[in-house]
Length: 189
Image (cartoon, rainbow, N blue to C red; front, side):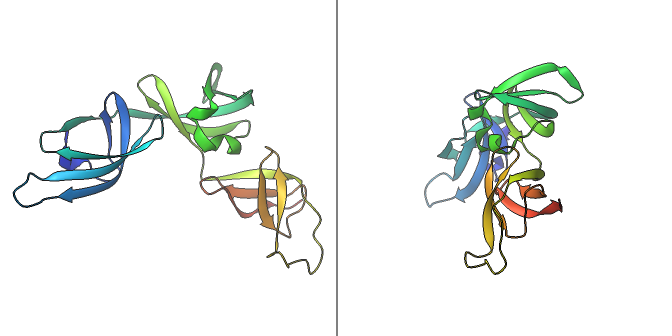
């Protein structure tokens, strides 16, 4: 069991049957009053962020969250199909709202990490950097740097991002999936 002072930044605990992550922690002790802890918490299932205060009498159990590798197969009508790593027959689907803003970075046969709470997958984690092929890129002209030296290209998964002027159609580029920004050219056409 965790006491109210164990709810430091980064701790994961169970409250009301759901897992929460502590984002901020502040211990307060005022004169003539019992000490309290003010926290900012993120619900790991819904993604909602709430502020909550706890007292000495509060205690919680640690959330049992299991990590396991899975492979993304394909998407169809807002449903994303995955399988266990190395076992393509054991398929399951996740709705777009359960994988938040990460859906736009998925491409077939990508290995991701699934977070399970109980028997339910509550979230996925993508690799920090992923490679994508550029399928559409406007031509760049010599001296065309008035716009800061970047242009918008379309990637193999339909995502459109800003890249430097030297990126051409057919190049493979590397993206940071947490920021959604161009990192480097991985392979030249």
